[in-house]
Amino acid sequence: MKSFLKYTLATLLGLFLFSILSSLFFFGILGIMMSSREKPVTVKPHSVLYYKLRAFVPERTLSFPLFGSNPFSFDMTPAPGLNDILADIHKAKEDDNITGIYIEAGMSSPGIGTIEEIRNALLDFKQSGKFVLVYCPDLMLQSAYYLATAADTIYLNPAGAFQFTGMRSEIMYYKKALEKIGVEVQVVKHGKFKSAVEPFIRKNMSPENREQIRIYMNSIWNHILKKISVARGITVQQLNDLADRLAIDSPEAAVKYKLIDGVRYKDQVLDELKEKSGYSGKNVRFISLSKYTKVPARKHGSYSKNKVAVIYAFGDIVMGAGNETNIGDKRFAKAIRKARLDTNVKAIVLRVNSPGGSALASDIIWREVKLAHQVKPVVASMGNYAASGGYYILSSADTIFTHPVTLTGSIGVFGLIPNAGKLLEDKLGITFDVEKTNKYADFGSIYRPLSSGEKAFLSVQIENTYKTFVNHVSQGRHLRASYVDSIGQGRVWSGINAVENGLADTFGGLYDAINAAAQMAHLDNYRTITLPVVEDPYQKLIKQLTGDVRMRTIPHELRGLYQTWKVIMDTKNRIPVMTRLPYEINVY
Image (cartoon, rainbow, N blue to C red; front, side, top):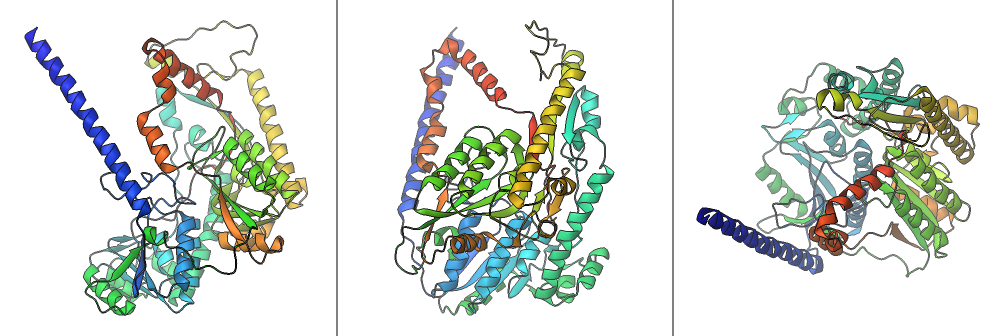
């Protein structure tokens, strides 16, 4: 008994100390965040803007600083979003205290559409006569190299490596694994190219899927090679030959074939940067892109009440409010409605970087875009993806901008319901029984196979959704429905193909879309606002770390019941009919 009390007291003491330390850590982090937010930022003469290329680049900087930051560091600065990266590059172009841009790029790289947008901004920056230098301290990935070709100078660590092998699309298939554990995936779809469900029902690519991947991948690769060719003075044929021969087997080979300008250690690069910046001090005057974001941009003209609303749609399309990393129908419908009803908002830019998601949520957002389109100009801008549901929501825009490397289209629909009954019974010994008032009251149950009547019902839903999708695109793009169906069928297109077949209007990035929207609204002087409105990051931090307030008000005995209720309510919002891109493609 004495031993039991000793261990109990020790445990309670440990929990008490842990709670105190956790509270101190929380309030310490909060204090650091608050103080860093208020710290003024000045740019000294001969400064160099510094940016480290990351794998995760959201469309706009996330409001919650812990997203994208190092949890083991006291630097609570979030990873910059594409909006701030582009704005800072444009701002630095006109800043007399910024002499150039230094980028570290290599093993981490975002989507190719994001790369394209940043690369174009760097090319525009260079028109000011300022330098851009890119250094790779480790492995230079192809996508990172594509960005680097916008620079005046590219250096690689002498002990580094260089990847130049061409593009690939590699898909993982789960059919055999699911069979082994006793799970059957029941699928209904419209679109012979709609391959989102293939990993669950096949062991390899269908001929249709292989065809579409080959076409859009070659389209993207050829575009990249042409841009590299212009930047480095190497023919497309020579570049393909280097990839086919695995010729770039060392940093020296990359120099030999003029892909880069030299090999350097970090200290040598820093010495060169100090010289290029014209600074006579001891070290280079770097200012990070995250800090530079806090520097106000140079004002042009007088203050204007006229606004262009930029609405960022990033991530999967889902039912409900969603968050900053997905597109919740309630949150986005509200944002679009707000821009439509605001008389000072003269035009709307819908920036979409989404592979799609819920068909119902897509249609709800589409409706708000359509209503906005009826009263003011709406311009769409595509990011890495604007496919399936991502294309659905922007299809009624007046003008659609795309990157050549964007993946779009995928006008198709699928429904997917797993049957885990065999897994639960044979492997785990769990069985289910049901009593119901009507024949199909348990439709959608994952514990049994679909009946023929249920499959027919789901097929009707899929067909109706596909027809609605096609009609929306037909009306929005002023194309015959039969033609939309012919380029639909779930087929994924590159941005180049999309301009050719009428799914998009022209090539361009976010700033091109904003300028076009302003011109359509006849605005000479205006300012931009961003939507949806983000929750205050510090309130969000407190809310997430203190837990669910509702949970704390429920008696302890009923908390298990509340958790079960939450699971049921979350499940109820999952609609089986989806408009989504099959998978993601990266330039490795």
